[in-house]
Image 1 (spheres, helix red, strand yellow):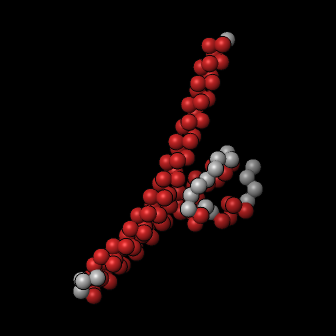
Image 2: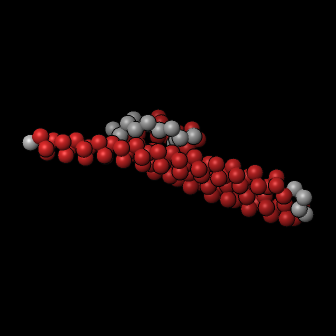
Image 3: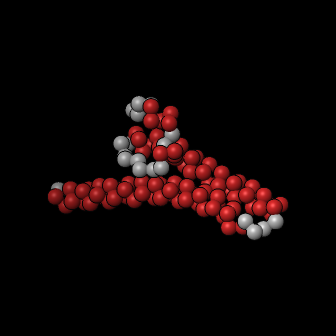
Length: 108
């Protein structure tokens, strides 16, 4: 019986650790996408010596890529937040990616 208890405790400990790792991966994914969006926007300033039509193209492309990154981060946050909140797992994401409607809802 003690052997079975020890095995069950080891499995539970592994699952707790896995929850922590996956939660951290979620946080890092959202933070990376936010960083990448900012990186794209910073690229515009690096090409200030290019002709005006090229600068406009670079600006438009960078804005589009930044929007994609932020959209992905928002989509991930919208999918992940309810599950994490329901399990009472602390969420340390940039505040703009915590869905406003979810923070006001009661989680069952």
